[in-house]
Image (cartoon, rainbow, N blue to C red; front, side, top):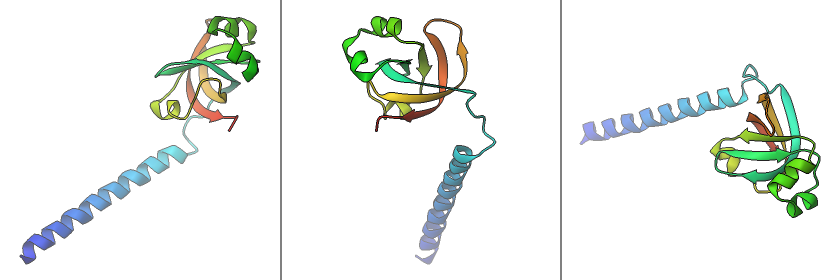
Length: 124
């Protein structure tokens, strides 16, 4: 009986240690200042979205964006960019949110295309 409880305690302590190590590694990579930072930022309104990307159009008001189709929003805005996002980022966003997106590079197309390195909602 004593041997089983010792093994159970050792197993629980091992699992706690592994969990703690994993947690601290994730915290390190999330807050590490040596991780690459965005080279550019874009502020705008989300006028279209799917599970993996958002279309951000600059120089539009939320009231304008609500009344326009996606193509009209692209035509009326200053810049338009499709940003690839993570599922965690996607879960915090809604259509017509005003956002600030940090990125490294944008593809030369219209609308432009890039990957969101950072994402911040501005209309909370």
